[in-house]
Image (tube, rainbow, N blue to C red; front, side, top):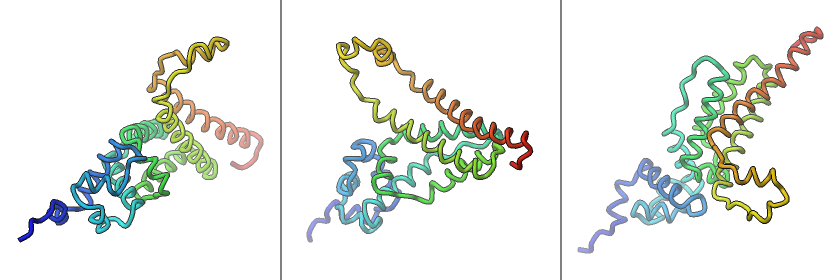
Length: 219
């Protein structure tokens, strides 16, 4: 009787939960560039073909991975104050993104839109509506603030490992030299950005509504 291979023994126990855990381990360890079907299969101790019984392709594996990560970070409980809840949503998004930085990049690379992101978008849009803005203004505010938030967090990750310029290159630029040599406070920068972002966007729309009301135009 021929011995049963490790892959054959593992296949009956293979399920979406095990695949999700292994996929996350690979994504965290290897980054987006090292995330492959073969690497995940190796992490599980099975052949790459075994994964195709559960996911159709790499995009399907990325969707499974994204669903697993989102499920492990429950949305913050609402407080009833739209501004505080928006700020907490910003912090939640940053925490989830920084915990598993490869996942967002993989989703973008493979154009993966999973239904699990819909409750996030629904909450984000709902909070801007709760601010009292008109529907079209709230929609624009939600889109602009969401893109700004994602862009800020992505940029921080991209530049995290950048080396500082040589001092000789900055000799003629004292302000730039000071900025480059200052120890960054990532938390303080993020808090400043999200408070300014929300207040600034809301303030612009609110001023327009007040101006329209004062001139007798409908809002």
